[in-house]
Length: 213
Image (cartoon, rainbow, N blue to C red; front, side, top):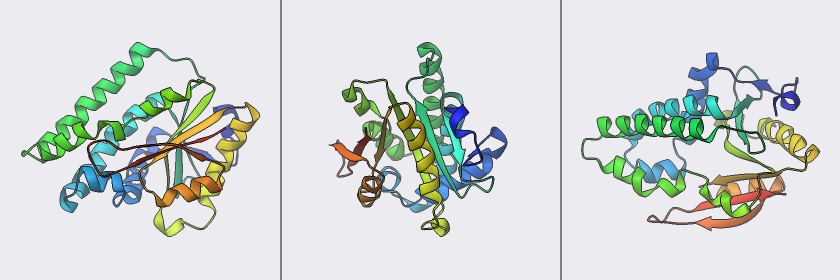
C-alpha cells in the first residue's frame, strides 16, 4: 500500500508522531457510542482512553499503515491491507500482548472491575470478526478513520478516503469498515459503502458493518 499512498496526497505517520496521534484519537472518540457504552463514567473515560489508544497504537504500528492529511494530524486513516502476507504467530502474539496490557489499565483504574467486565462483554464490538463472512482476502480494512471536530467539513475526510479508494480501485480490492455511530452510516454511503450487516450483542449498542466493492 505504501508505494501508492506515500505521495504528496498524504503524510505517513511515524512513531515520532505517536503523542499527537493518541491525542487525536482521544479527542475524536471521547463521545463515540462505543466508548460511552464501555466506559460510561466521563472521568474514567478521560483517563483511560489515552492509555488504551496507546496500547492500540503500539499494535497498529506493527500491523497496519497509518496516514494523516498532513504533519499536523488534523485527520487520520489507519488501514490493514489484507492482501499482504503476514506471520499469524507473530500477529496473534502481538495482539495478545497488547490485549493483556490494556486489561492491566482497565483493572488498575477501576478496582470494581466494572469497566473490565464491560470490555469482556463488548469484545464483539472491538474486533472485525464479521469480515470473515466476506470470504475474500482481496480486501483492505479501515481500522480507524477520524478527523478533529474543528476540522470537519474542511475536506480532510475526503482527502484521506479518496487516497485509500484510489488504491483499492486500482487493485480491485474490497474495502471494509465498521462504525458504532449510526450517524456515520450515511457519510460512508456517500463514499460508496453499503451496509453489510448490523452486529448487536449484550448491549443496546450496534456495530454497523460496511463494505465498498
